[in-house]
Length: 361
Image 1 (tube, one colour):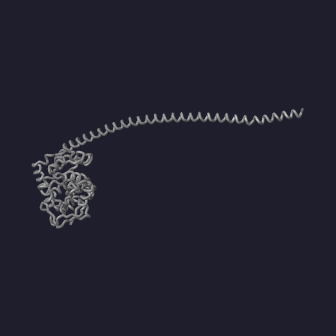
Image 2 (cartoon, rainbow, N blue to C red):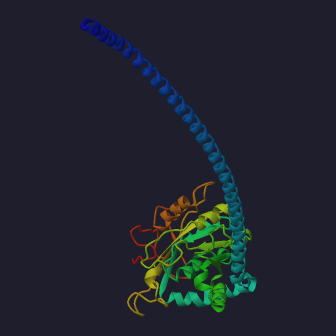
Image 3 (cartoon, rainbow, N blue to C red):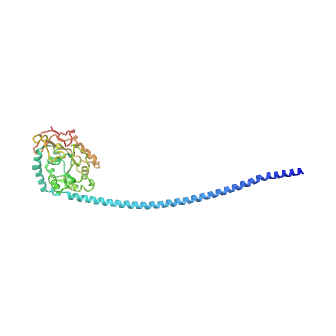
């Protein structure tokens, strides 16, 4: 009986041993199927999310494109409106400047009676007064025999004596057809002063700043004068030099010369700064009234013809060479003016003497 029991227990053990692997395999299969199902669910969820994101990105891009198009249209409209406004403002500003310059100008000072009065003042008023303090010598005046008018006369500026000195040095027919550019903010603030300087020196108002440049309407009256064959005397430094040294040259003279296809005649003035520097209202002799008079020199240098398309600043650099006392082919003699000193022979142009300073000999 014991043996029969043992046999049964052994048979049960073998049956259990044979059933265990089968159960494990079924569990593995169930797990695999569950994992596979889970993967499918995750793939479907990921695909759905990608599609959702793709649609969302496309919609966002479309919205951005529409927004950019609307914004671009607004910007273009604003820019066009602003550009039109600026254009109208510039036109209005130019018209206002032209009207302002015409109102400041004194055109009657260029009529025949005014020219006669001006010549009388220069010859019988300023000439003897200046002769009490200065001696004037002119070099190269015969250059004007070969130059057809009009021209742009460009000179250094260090004294109020520069303008009457240059006018006295010019030949008569040139002097009577030369207008002098004068600072509108200095000489044209009062009508009485404007009339006086226009009569005596035939000045025309020039805006030194705020005029929009040569092309901004501020020089239209000057263009009209040149078209009428008036020459123009310009001091391109814009103000008197406080030291007698040549300052920065503005390029307006070169622009005007190029626009009208006329030459520039550089004029080097020497001695006026010592005779009547800025801040002094009347000339003086060297060491008191009974001492020597100041020696003034006016050098008319060779004309400069701006090349087509040449940069105006380069033209003014060529002018600077003459104003600073550079080489010149001036004739080897000096013209005495109004009976004053003409004893020096040869073209004297000491480059080391400051422009506007006296060269005592």
